[in-house]
Amino acid sequence: MRTLQSIVGLLTLLLLASGVPAPPAVAAVQAVSTDVHLFYYPWYGSPARLGSYRHWDQGGHTPPNDIGANFYPTLGAYDSGDPAVVDQHMAWVQRSGAGVIVTSWWGQGSYEDNLVPTILASAAKFGIKVAWHLEPYGNRTAESTVADINYINNKYGSSPAFYRDAAHGNRSAFYVFESLRIADWTALDQVRSSSIVLAQTTDTTKVAHFGGMYTYDGIAGATAPGWKNASDFCKANGLVWAPSVAPGYIDDRAVPGNSTPTVDRANGGTYDREWGNALNPATGGAPTWVSVTSFNEWHEGSMLEPARSSPPGGQGYLTYSGAYGTSGAASETAYLDRTRYWVGQFTGAPGPLPNPDLALGRPVSASSNVPGYFPGYAVDGNQGSYWESANNAFPQSLTVDLGTASPVSKLVLRLPSFWGARTQTLSILGAGNDLAFQQVLGSSGYTFSPSSQNTVTVTFGPVTYRYLRLFFTANTGWPAGQLADLQAYRV
Figure 1: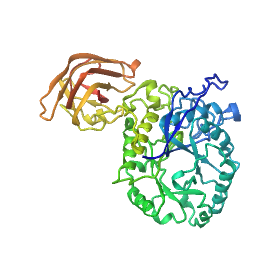
Figure 2: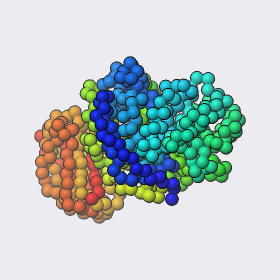
Figure 3: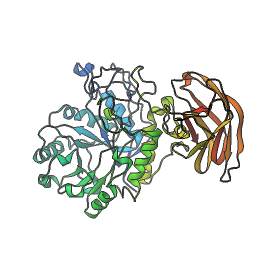
Figure 4: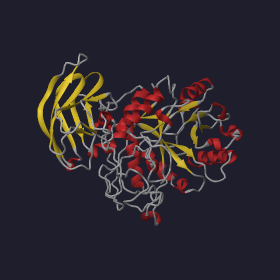
């Protein structure tokens, strides 16, 4: 079993002038893993401390309600120098089960460097350790990187929150972002005895003098290109392998016109797939650490940090609604809680499994559909796309194949959130491998209302079926069966 660190923290609840409440008191021992590292960004600023916003205005936006991100933080357009904000972050990191943050660092005396004491003090309260993400500031060289490593070790190494890996000689850890910008890293030999320095690459010909490899790229994590080869190389050469996983990627608001692909969160399906790639011996090999992109890189939409379920209107913000079957306020922390599950899978001490949507991405068929509104849109995790049956031709049906007989006791049905209210009359059927359908619930009218985000939850006594079918006979809003999401959950 991998190293687990038990921690207890206790904070007094305060109402701060900043409007950000202190995190709740930690009432019980929590286990965190120092082998799971979250990339952390302390580069945000606000008028309360700086006189202006920092980073939130990226892409030409005007905070506080209009920010350079496709999601909106639960804490609003916060300041990374506010101790109450950092305390809340560390409480959330603790909740995730990860034991290390890898803080973004832009050189000696930089904005991020000046906030390190605040970060270390807060991390120490919650038993979180701090490692370092060395960013490509202007004129960075191999020699300046060695100087930076010595500076950080000497200046901050006495903090109880300073991360050292006991399994690798009690050395500190440094991730070097865009390490391929520099060809000759011979200078790193000077710090090899004190520090583990990771190159950002899977190219095994580019890691001479480094102590390991990581990937950072949350887009590549969905397919894990080169991961197995990198893992095997690290294992054979005594290096650290720390593949990076992410819940998704979208930077449309922060970088207008950017052609970088978007990776949809798929209600948690993407995050699960990337963790699966990291831990699967056939794809990710055997990681030393798993790094997570990211705790709070809001510009790229890759964060675990809670996002508001009801963000400021008029900006087109996304939410986590639907993640692992959650909605509303419960969805805001869905990715923190799912991280704790995966930390358990990695360390061999699994926690409770968040309830996954059994229908997400599964094969689906329908009695009919109008052109362009396919059955698959009902299980793609996107509330904006939808299936629609042939018009004026009731009854109609939609059937999903869960792949194996599974106990189910709840369905969540959704229509696009911006549609007007309507009531659809339908019954629910189930079948085993023989496709002999049995009634689960008789015909009834279900009202989809914008006030509930056009979402209907249907619960029933547990049933075990491979196939689930919705049988539509009426719709007050349109003469067809319509569905944007069919989600199915276990007992």
